[in-house]
Length: 105
Length: 398
Image 1 (cartoon, rainbow over the protein chains, first blue to last red):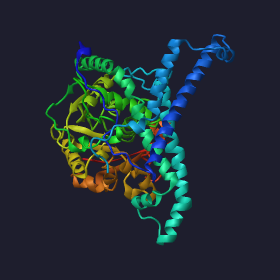
Image 2: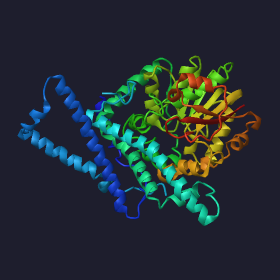
Image 3: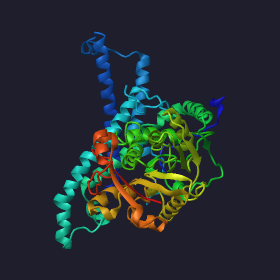
């Protein structure tokens, strides 16, 4: 029954006026994108390390296997969708909803 | 995979989501420890000497330091990275919350019902008006803020705050986010061993994460916690049960408490007063005085006041006021804490102020050894999340 309880979507951004720290607002946006990108790179590195550790535990030498690997069509399509979501996250700041009302200053 | 939250209200993150949270936590630790140290060097090495040579004196207060720092690239990168990290904290939780919110709500209901059966009440007041200081801005840039309701019996904002705080605080608030409560309650117990409170009240408790340790430190006491935000109270009621204690949660405004005169032995708050306009701070302190029994203790964990720190330290702490949607942060820190307690009715002779080392951060031995020793505000780790954090507290005996 609880799944039938109504709910509204959660807000994605805070009610706040985003401060500008640099003379050119583009620089502020670049910092945001840089940090999102760095975050995604880190996510990959954690995943890769886990992958290598699990594979090694199972006796698979990954380097050789990876060179010979080709994705299936399903995998390739899924990767393409993931890639778009990735780009959206990295460029989040450009698509951020405009603040509803100016809080802060 | 190491869990972000250690109690049963946790949401299940996948590996990538957990890695994203790890990154944000690491980024915040880097900005607030390493970059904060670098920024101080820039100030002391160049900005302050330049100010001195052009003005014939050092900057008088935090605002003058702020103006002198604004053109500095280091300050700009520190600020923009810190601001982005703050936004990323919430974004590292939101997709998980969207997916898990029904499940969290159901678990919260179950735990809450168990708590009720065991005698711990949850009293919500649909007619309570949410004060303007809460509705005006999303404090800490948390989308939806503490009071946001997005469905029937919603606990989303409670879950968002609990998990977000764990990403945000890089361990500095304790592994169960309860270090402030554990440190203050443990300090009071150690310093005043004959003081045995029977009724304890926590004001502006949000999800009750710092109320829980009071119930653990004083297991015979009846513990109450209030807040204006229903989602946090629902979540907090369940969270307290998940942490093995029963606490009574009430939706109530701290400026007009619905409790009898002389009915509590301890009135506590943590990181609460600086969210209020000055007129409300005065009302809260007067209410604390009213509900305390003679011989009771009011004790607030707060940011250290500006009049007890250097211009640079004032600038550093006031960053939140300028850039983190904390409009009342600086006005609070400009108050004279002893004076406002006296104005609320407390005897100035019975004012107390403690700088308490983080119990988890320093370890139990160092913590217990500190109980009998007074420390002054001044170390640059007081009241800020950094390695070696110390909690500033003030209050008074009635």
